[in-house]
Image (tube, rainbow, N blue to C red; front, side, top):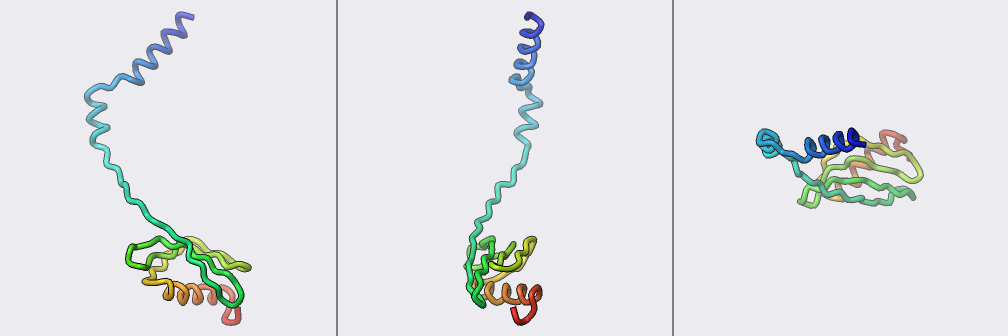
Length: 104
């Protein structure tokens, strides 16, 4: 038991002891604390529901990152900048048309 106790004590001492150079390294760390607000915008088109995930920019618009058409396809990894929900509806209709054709 003494060996286990000694190892535990050595670990705790090493883990919880902060030397000046460690404190300096911790203080020099830069953290990017940028937060993004997202909303799901829902549109009805041709009897289907289209839900777009939008990263808001604070001016009533944002960037569409993905969308889901029910029933139908979904697409992610997008970066479509829009100024309003009306513009988003038009741009998304164009995106869906590319996938399903003009008579979707």
